[in-house]
Amino acid sequence: MTRIISIMRRLLSSALVIAALAFTVSCERNDVVDYRTTRTVLVYMAADNNLTDNANPNVLAMKNAMNTDMEYANLLVFVDKFDAKPVLLHLHDFMIDTLKVYDELNSADGGVLRSVIKTVLDNWKAETYGLILWSHGMGWIPGSYSMETKSRAPMREEYLTKYFAKNNHPDGSPQDEHMEIDELADAIPDGVFDYIAFDACYMGAVEVAYALRKKADYIISSSCEIMSYGFPYKTVIRDFLSGNITKVCRDYHANYDAKYGFQRTASISLVKTDALDSLARCFKKIVAAHKEEIPQINPTDLEIQCFDRLEKHVMFDLEDFIDKLGTDYDDLTEFRLQLEKCVIYKNSTPYICSDYEDERYGIKMNTFCGLSVYIPLQSFDEGGLNAEYRKTEWSRDTGY
Image 1: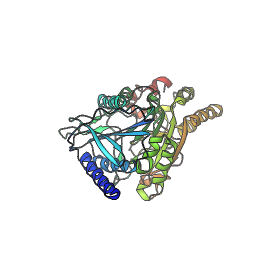
Image 2: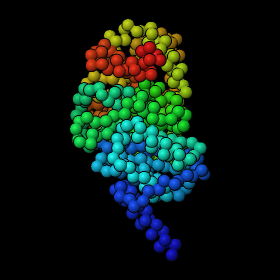
Image 3: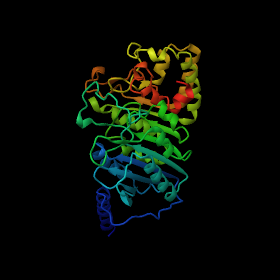
Image 4: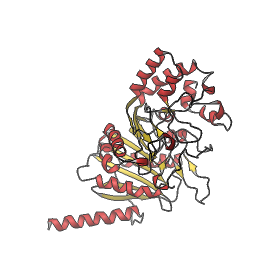
């Protein structure tokens, strides 16, 4: 009899998974308050874009890690897919419950993110909270700015990478919606989350971390592209729930470092946000001494490590930039000490997006400090990117 009940339970669980992921549900559950838990984690998946096919495998991987000994934590997943109604899911005991079905919305809108966060905080009480942001991403670069997106090597369709957040326009026009970094920061309450993790490309930028420094104690992100498969959730979701975020970073790197060719692509860092103000003060002192020369430098000639594959690079290694700027030894030493306090874990694969382990077809990671930085070159004055950059908190507070 016990075996029959066990089989029936597994069959019921499978049926619920299929129903939840197909977004066909018979009821909504909104009366969920659990004061016994110690951590609630929200995964916010803005997948109404070309990453939509990656959403279900990631959700299923999370579900498959949620066995019956996870009673100390709640895992909530908001999913907005292409051609499907957005849903809020509860994953537990190898099962998926659909808590709420939404009308069509724009998940790249800060108001939507704010509303989903409020729903989770109001109804799934815990001592600590974590937030995972899953979508496309382009660091601090505004969605309205037209980037030269031709990569140094052709992007293969089976190896999509991702950035935060993008929402396809309802009528199919190219005017996609994006969430700007100041809008993202405004949508997240101060001092609630232990950590914010970006499953999205290029979000490991000092400008992003600085904008979110009051939103969480730690930020997990990548300075480079992230493969569309995202985090290996079956391996790391339990550590997200237990708060073992250093292990999350290690396992993320190990997962991709064990692969071959193009798929051996990963950079990851863990940033302690209360160290960012001191880092900004050091940075401000250094760039003030080089204010006139910075717009005129040639990052290629100086061989400053870049992290993007755009025709005109916009993401550079923060420490390498400060070093090759010709910074005074004492100032450089102080900066490195502050950077070490800020970036408490970092790692990368030897190459990024390279089938042939050759920088002509990807990026060779000669150095990696864990954070990228923009260089406001004079060539970016035309088009207004420098003007947009000076609106960021990092630029305003450092005079950079």
